[in-house]
Amino acid sequence: QKEVEQDPGPLSVPEGAIVSLNCTYSNSAFQYFMWYRQYSRKGPELLMYTYSSGNKEDGRFTAQVDKSSKYISLFIRDSQPSDSATYLCAMRGGGYSTLTFGKGTMLLVSP
Amino acid sequence: DAGITQSPRYKITETGRQVTLMCHQTWSHSYMFWYRQDLGHGLRLIYYSAAADITDKGEVPDGYVVSRSKTENFPLTLESATRSQTSVYFCATWGQETQYFGPGTRLLVL
Image (tube, rainbow over all chains, first blue to last red; front, side, top):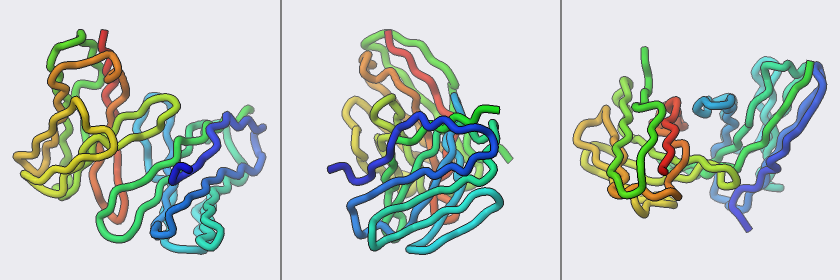
């Protein structure tokens, strides 16, 4: 079993839809959880960052962490064509530890 | 504020040649990382560095060499390039609890 599992997609939705992206993980030592967005031919950019369990909201984006289920989610409300990208989940333990990434989910939002 | 830059952005080379990919940061962060990104594998850590003159292996270090003589630079060298090293290479630094990535170098080994 890989440490982080993420459905590669592609996930195709119409503009305005609510999008749910998810990752599961196996390492209970993970404490910090991130979502990166990567546009085609660009580097990953940090989108959301959360510590431990709970929700965090930033505009149209909401990140959820459920450590008891080892499950994290990213919700995008009112999705836009500009949200079309690959979304990577990432996580780490405490301190300056390395990140463990999911393989990414490709999202396509059609006008 | 350039942040983190990589050069070259695109490189074509031949099997057996030595190639060096450059990474430069303007933030003076201690930690720097090199990843490769391939379809089906996602991002995989090659090497990382905690400070000048301190480096450590990641998940896929074979065939790569790194050095860190200055905090702001972290070059990655392919001593004898192979076709399996065709990939997109990303450099990253550590800042504000997580990693920030450069724009990437697309390397094609013929």
